[in-house]
Length: 222
Image 1 (cartoon, one colour):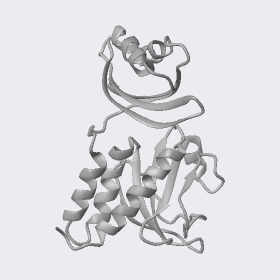
Image 2 (image 1 turned 90 degrees about the horizontal axis):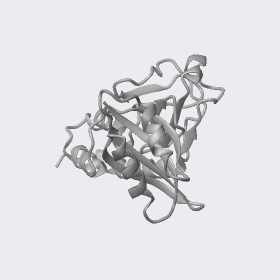
Image 3 (image 1 turned 30 degrees about the vertical axis):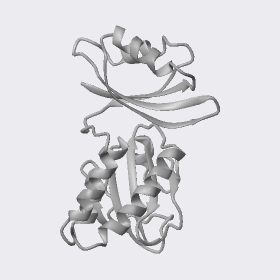
């Protein structure tokens, strides 16, 4: 089974090699590594691994934390496809999408780009219920919900303890981030249950991708 391991590691040469060695000695195969951010002498890395059937997930935490200075921020199952060119493939697919299908394609594909649980595209304002323009599999229902941050003038992190969230969503620790898509009244929202919270580097990446995607989605199909 595959897992997504988020680590906070000292930002020094050789640290990822030491982590890879520790995981390898525990019988764990590393599938991919994404460096999310660096700063303050630490780095945040997302590592997708394959865990043998006879090993418990806790063994990943134990193995990683054998390396001095390494902290495990989160561990969760991972079932998405992997691709080092995820963003480019999404933009190419959007450029070829038939009229009226680009938004649905965007919502369906963003979870694999960001290693998240789901994505939705919403339209509306704080005066009434929002409209769901598109939603990926596993997305919670926004139907009939009023979201106070629409219209959205700039990208935002939407933490799981926010007062506007339904109580059940807070209990599930649903973390989200959102950015405008084409206009302040339309937003792309990405979420996952149980954390970890999205980081500023992930939000900036979403802003960049959504900005390009909004332009591509409005071009005639290639």
